Image (tube, rainbow, N blue to C red):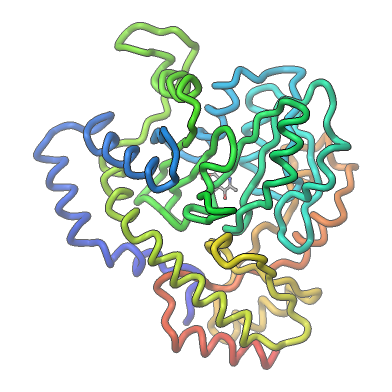
Length: 361
Ligand SMILES: *Cc1c(COP(=O)(O)O)cnc(C)c1O
């Protein structure tokens, strides 16, 4: 069987280093906000090319804390793509702001920059871009709009660790970025974990305090904060895996290139990329008007696939107030997309087998 994502195999490569790290932390007796966090934040900041990185509990918290850090609240509008994992939108709602959904570009699956300006009002405070499936959002038009209307640009980089746009890594393409290190992401922990990156020292200090009960020093609470910290074990594991992120992404690119060259089945629409380094292939998303049939066909032949995502946010029960809204492009993507297996541990024979089977659909 070709697994969709073999997390055991991915992490098994690091077992000796992980075991050594566990021993070190057990010996130290220090579990939170220690040297592992210090080291990982520095290494991740320099990897992304930003001044600051901060480990937090998960990706949703990272988004939440950025919005909270800017002090956005009720009445404020935040622009967000209509096709994203619901976390991006939940973070906006959680802060009492209004999510303003914008249709994606059918070729990049990222927000369509041409459709943003018409949604900007005097209440608009920020644009959240989501580098969906691992592809950096084309930013130039978005930077232009942010300048023109004095908006913050926030990246949801949960799927795109390491992607490069115009020579800059994601995490360094806006005012602040949220990362998830959920186990299945390109850089994944052995549990929940997340991070914020920014060049804005004031925002960084505020988020650091917010994430630790709103305290800038012990028992001194300047904000109504939350508890959202990255523990030492996860920080330690992530720092080990960070060194292999580029080579893992390279292998993902190799597999994506192979799929794009070899999959010839006319009923399957392959993903498009303008620039190889802009995509880190968290997900290899194809479209097919007979998606369910394709999924069953592959499953019966031992190939696991996934759907990211079956239901668009505006049709979720959590947003019942949006049930009559219509985002046809987003809906089309949700209806037709299928995620094929892609990961740094897939073998050449597995990807050859997958292509042979899919071409006989
Ligand atoms: C995974 C993901 C998140 C949430 O991350 P968690 O660590 O699970 O909270 C947010 N946005 C996107 C686009 C994601 O893929």
